[in-house]
Length: 108
Image (cartoon, rainbow, N blue to C red):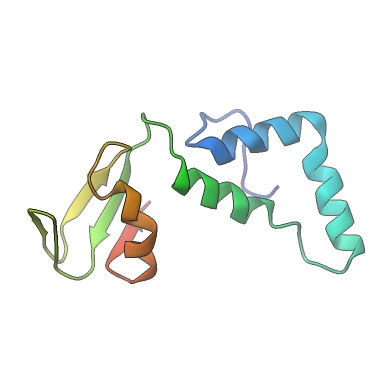
């Protein structure tokens, strides 16, 4: 799995699953099978990132830049504003859709 370091703290359930598959060598087998089938990779990194977004650990804080002004419930978010989103933030359940709709952009 490219770009994955099993020694780093897990940001979500995807990282934890990746650590388990790495420990048992399942990730290497999946990658080899995918290459034999003609695919570039097994898609493990994409799944890991997707699962981390769906099920982040509470200590995980992600920063997002607001690309377009919007209102959410009783809060207003303005273009250029940087917001920190953790598991308890009101936007957390909808972050994936807001990023896909080009309303938010993750700041790395």
